[in-house]
Image (cartoon, rainbow, N blue to C red):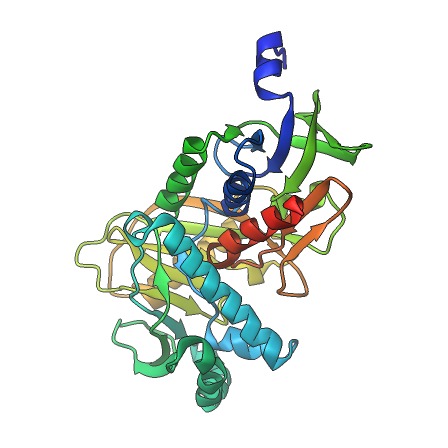
Length: 373
């Protein structure tokens, strides 16, 4: 990059806080830093034209975990840990709603449904038998029962004919969310540089230095890494990229489906948006292949999504596919996010485990707090 003296002086010098990644975590971190340090020079570096991870590519579920997911978590976490995970997600969603506003988010609390395939009768029975105990476990958070049994009124096929309903689950417009966050960041005088990929990072004596696009040397007093699924490119932590593929239909006349839906242990998920069905998942078809940072789609998974649309979700409805895409999540063996200091001047907030909408705001705030201490 052939930068002028003016460009280098105005955008790449005297940086107090460099935030790497302009997704939910990065922008919330930048805003929280600006609130704590009003006169600081804060610059956000983003490798893509738009946020490159999952923040603008997710399905827009305002969720905190389906019943089967919570039961599965209880097999690897203590009850206290699971309750705390749910509590953090609920509080994170509330923080997001307060920060952006329900109207801008297009937040709709239509509720969430968990579907079970014909082959998953045993899992459905297990969930049904433990429904009341999970409601009791979560009652201190919601002061009400979360899960209940409801009938399949949506004309879904090839599933158990009863669904598990969660009245607290909602949905948002992901694009409007990120647009609003960017406007807040600009209003606060925070700089966002796009097409600026951080390709190397190191701790210096009293600062951190990094390379942009393998060419430009930049330094900052402190650096906050908020790249989630791409974190392994810059740090050595227990976070693995996980690609999630999605498609969306063209508008469907008289669409009768409203809500957020989890299918087949949550490996598939769909919702209504603008009289369309947005449908994603299928990572379980090729776990190893989807452990990638390549933003692409595959025939194997896209064909399966279309098949399930035709046979299970919209069996009596003609539809056309409008668009396909993918996003990169950050996952690990543990559900707890990694928010930690890596060196004197370098900090990270990563591994959101597919719950970025729920916890991204809080992780950004926590990352800023850590970097300010």
